[in-house]
Image: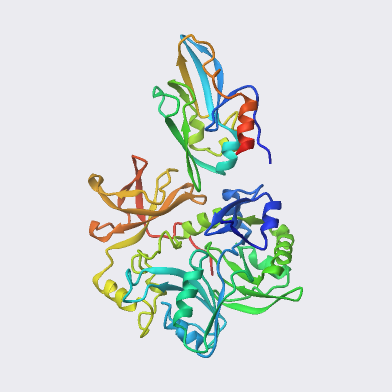
Length: 136
Length: 372
């Protein structure tokens, strides 16, 4: 069954998505989650370990974990910044990620400081991510 | 090396199963429209159908076949009559390195004094057969039937209704089997056994006939809420029961004494492989013992993680762990050092990738079994 890749956001090759929410003071807020392909590959998600609000994160370093019955997968920060919010609803309902990975199943929001425009601009667009999934 | 496939492989692929390699066999982990949690729940509350054809099958036949096997494997065949099956262990013989360690755990079907069928694990089938063949007396023949026989597991409280609906006999005591099962003229061996903790059956059928039986069971089970189940759910189900899995709770380095599988050892038998080593260990007391670990929340102990006692000292290692779909918390099995003096109810921690997470020591099963 083909998985969805909406074109309103950007992607990493580690199967995270990033969607700019807007500006907040001097920063840009980016919402982050895992892709439909990632949740499908993991299977039923039963536990999520998220960073603390206020924690600094940087690209390429793990900021959390998503666990299925069988395996654990690291979640990497797609952008550098400070964790502004976490999806606390996932603590009791991690299966929300399976049901709605691009919506209610979001993981964290990261505030990126600086005025260099869209902090997700350098990431994969939907076509590039789809190509990556197709090749895997 | 390409994987071996079950005779039901095409059906699994057509059903959208995620396939994975299990000891050289490509087998379904979970099915589209199911998933581990839904498949697990189907078995606990209704009925599930598993293809477990990766399990080995072998016959040992000839004059004195049963007595010969009884002199090798640990459990005591005098405890059962023909027509009954028995859980038993193949241990490393005395005189070999790791004597008493477990080569494999298996189910033995006793047909009669001259005819025994063995169901070992996929990974160890060849080794068990090699060892039994090597020492077999004249006239006793060990024959591999792995590719010839498919194994299906029908498990759950509604399994008797499904079996009856396809015309197979289900009125059997626990661990009894019958060859009287005919399905469209095909011989099917039905055994009241399983690996889930629920009332259930394992069905042995000629590989080329397995597809027709699989289809018939799924069709007949529709009214009972049947769900095809993959090996993912098989693992969460067995872990909730605290059943050992070879390579995790039993291995060449882990003896039956340590895994609390001594109930499957015929201690009064004059001979079985590893007897001296196991008796000596039993006398001295095992240096480590298998326990259950239950997390207060969803944090999952995983195999290989260190178990930490007071002050953060390592007192053992997690051997299996998963999320319990029934209890909605993390559960695990662990070998804990006897010297640490751990008792039921003790509060320990598991080192989850650098974060110590609390767990309570419990005696499995985590969930009450309904096998009988």
